[in-house]
Length: 51
Image (tube, rainbow, N blue to C red; front, top):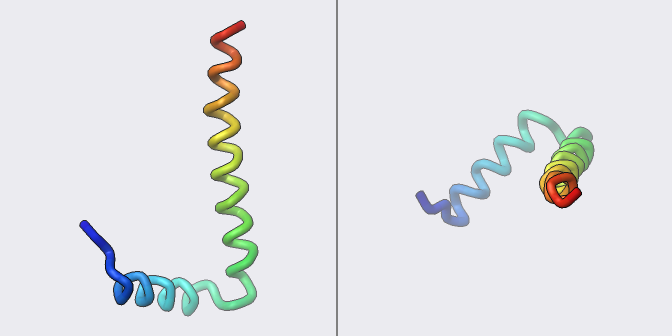
């Protein structure tokens, strides 16, 4: 399932219409924090196993 440029633009337009311009930075920040915490959790589990 490959997404082309046209499909990505349509998806971004729909997200923009649903959330609005004011909430997009907060949404991006929340997603970024979730990814960082997930990566930290994965690396933290390796450290626990070494102990």
